[in-house]
Image (tube, rainbow, N blue to C red; front, side, top):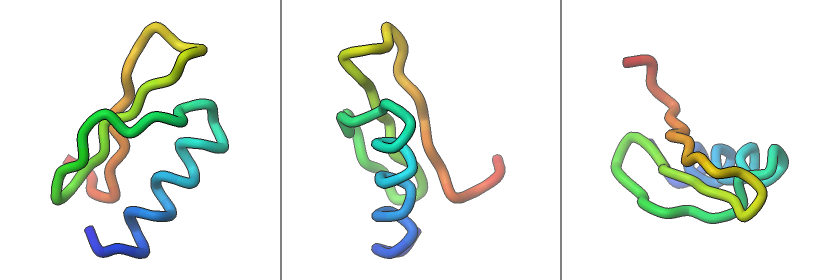
Length: 47
């Protein structure tokens, strides 16, 4: 994923309550929140 895709994915995560990026990979971000007990993987690819 390029820089623009990464920023847009982080923005979408923050807007939906996932404000902390736990891990950042070439193809996905793992995010968490103080409001949720789970973590979510956000990606620009369909796998």
